[in-house]
Amino acid sequence: MLNGKTVLVTGAPGFIGCRLVEKLVLEQHAKVRALVHKYSRAARLARFPVEMVSGRLGDAAAMDRAVQGCDVVFNCAHDWMMPKENLVGTQVLIDACLKHGVRRLVHLSTIATYQPLPDGDLDEERPTQPDGYLYKDTKIAIEKMILQAAKERKLPATILLPTIVYGPYAKSWVDFPVKNMRAGQVVLPDNGQGWCNAVYVDDLIDAMILAAERERAIGERFLISGPEEVTWRTFFEALQEPLGTDSLRYWSDDEIKKTKGDLVRNLKLILNEPKRLVSLLPIRPMLEAVYQRMGDTAKQQALKLWRFKRQTNDPVIMLPDKEQLPLYKARTHVSIAKAKRLLGYQPAFPFARGMALTQEYIRWAYPGSR
Image (tube, rainbow, N blue to C red; front, side):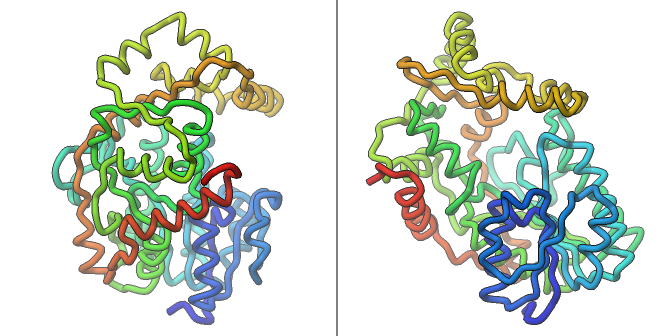
């Protein structure tokens, strides 16, 4: 138990960070401190007696203030558009934890470090290899930094690699798909029969708290998933059910590739919504690299263009991008045997239970849902 312990959460305003803060306050009765970059994003945190420290992960002075006096640090922060800052920030966090004698650093990584996922069993023994996908490569580099510090500098750190995390307020795997299904058609390959290793957010939070308490977790990596696999078809149809729409389409690889290669259609889509360029062409790493080199004014203009969307009566078709396509096709069984053995992790939310709670959120968050 973390009762009475002082706990820092970086990335606290985010989906996972905010739910972690809720459970730390309400169930663990911990003294919670949150590193917050923009207070405008911290409205949900403000409901709780949380000490907020202004700053970014790479801000050494702010991090020193935030970590001082903490027993445990949960690192949930990651900015996919600022890869270099993530790396610098990780080193700053490691140094601060060692300086102030933190008892445990729990770092949140991702199953994306293993993409493209292999068919069959996947456990922590499988090596990770950079491949040019910037998000994945950055996460792998961060893991290596933390594990090296654990080995060479005795940093008491644990790394968790969650699978597909869903639940209320989940941007990537609830809000984005729901918005896409409300706007048009969402395409899945292989009749949606790939395996989705979904984990409800509360199960992940429980695993994070266990990782902060178990001595055997120090210096280890743990895959965290739910109690069962479901197909991507089952997952997306469950998200669609409260919307009352018929938005899902199941295409073959040939249909997806042909549509991606339709130059006239692609140009029209890009003009209507510039961010579609990323899903139609394998250039996301290049765009991220260009964005990093822009000045502040240029970045502001780029973000305005990114958010632009022209109103049109043409049906919007959401195709899986370069990373999503193999993810939706893979039939991977993620093993949580190590987490069960060393952490005592036991997921408490079967898919039906977790999705029922998520559907309640969808009905509340998206008026007009049934």
